[in-house]
Length: 227
Image 1 (cartoon, helix red, strand yellow):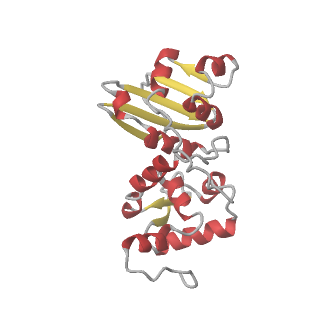
Image 2: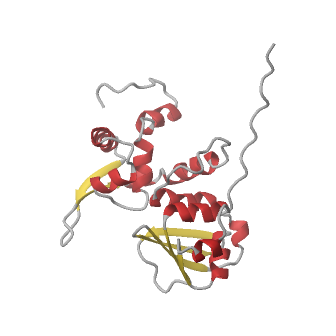
Image 3: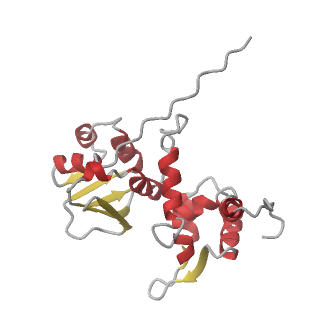
């Protein structure tokens, strides 16, 4: 980490920002929370980061003990990046930050969002009170990527990969799912337009999507009077 600017502050918050406060660093962590990824997969999830910047952030995160680089066993044999056990402990921090920022009145709600980002937002938005005693296993297919979501006992479990014996499968793209979650687009209309395919009942899909209510935007402070 030679040449990096540091806060030189004994506060643990300042030290945490030394570790993950560089531009793109925490988003690299976000991309790895659901499992290992190849460099090319990370590039796809972070299209705004140049290859050089992404390589630099990965190197810094490895030096800090947050990320490790390894080769998957045969037959895959691919080289991947993954979070260490300590790095995985950033998950509640990332989710908490997303939950807090979801109330921002300036959140760019119509900006593009990646599949992993959208899946992690489900954890941030999940409302145990809405879930009650609901038990649902859902499969989500987003632009060719598969995820499984299980809701039971007022808790949510989410992972990459196909769901076994799901009650519901939603096959769509991240933009459509984001619009469904925000309530900007009715489920039946999106299905009729061919923008998503539901295996299972639409009622079950509506119940599932209702478990992730969007927070109301925080009020902006009154404009300062001039003159």
